[in-house]
Structure formats: C-alpha cells, structure tokens
Length: 59
Image 1 (cartoon, rainbow, N blue to C red):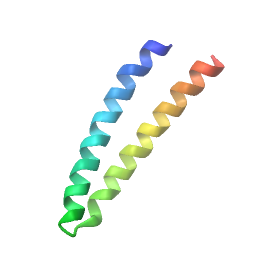
Image 2 (cartoon, rainbow, N blue to C red):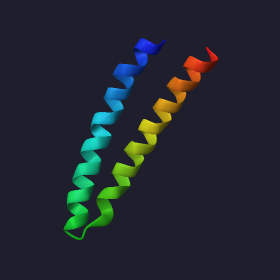
Image 3 (cartoon, helix red, strand yellow):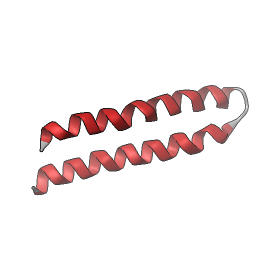
C-alpha cells in the first residue's frame, strides 16, 4: 500500500510544482490568473496525499 504512494505523489507533485512556478512568474508580471490552475493542482495533490495517508492508517 505504501509503495503505491510514491508514484502517485510524484505524478501529482511535479505538475503542481511547475504550475506554481509558472504562476509565480506570471504574478510577477502582473497577471494573477495563473494561480487558478496552480491552486487546483495543489488541491488535487493534497487530496492524493490525504487519501494515501488515510488508506495507510485505516487499511
């Protein structure tokens, strides 16, 4: 069960980190719209971490 958390976390963390980096760059240029997809990807990543942790604790 724990072994499956690594690839799932990497699969979600890499796009979230890239989206956050691009959103930060856009924000420095005065365009805050980039934080919408970055926020959604971060929320999905946190959800995956919580679900994996719950499955480990409960399962």
